Length: 335
Image 1: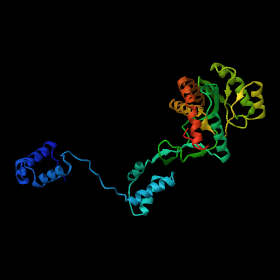
Image 2: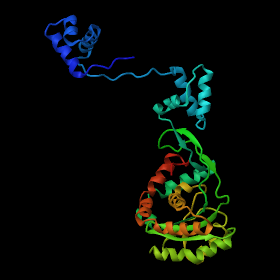
Image 3: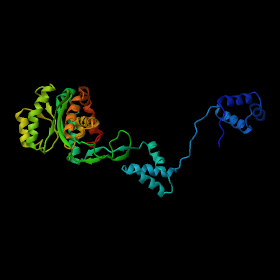
Image 4: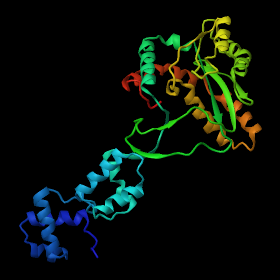
């Protein structure tokens, strides 16, 4: 067992006596410490000009340089590979390590993260997203303040969908999980908001069709715009769901003299209401609703609690989304 190391004061005394002309043997006898210890202290002082503790290299790595490179390469090429699979991979080259040793990946900037769920983008989608971003990048802040953003979402009674971990570097949107829009759930709601705050929220009963969508607009759209003081020349945003783009629905907008924002398909990351949906679901599940009635009640209560400053901030930073789409050449972004 290693003996307890000597204090800094003792080491300084050794050096002081050595400078005074004392030999190793006399210093050892005077301080009652082994001669080998005296020698080690003096040699260290001669080399580093200090008696302080220096940084130690630590325990030698169990992984060879070749194995470390292989681990990093495997995680980079197959971001959804698990720790167990990486462990088996190292065993194949003769290095038996435990799961914690594989944390060497952290030193290369790779961490286990939940894979973001992103819509599947075809080339035509990317071209449309890029066109939208470039054409609106120069729009003034006042233009975005006149937009009334809308969307539907499902809110589950018990938790969110399963998560999948991947290896990726911080603040990147790589290695996402493709999703399709909607697919059933506890309740479906429609809501809208602008930089001035949240508008109406409506629970959708049964299957949504064009007629039901127009009823929701008729009963909530103009009232929300009025409550948010958007004026008559506001712009309405909706995605390209077939019932949103139906001929009867578009005629309804025309008759009401409502301008509809041209929207690229498969682009939830361009709609800031998605950020509010995430915050809403987190807040609602913290309330632990017991049934669907409570779920609907908590949804509306938490929606109304979202601050105006939060809504304003999302719109204020909207040009950053457009810049991200342009940088990704129409591809998925971190938003």
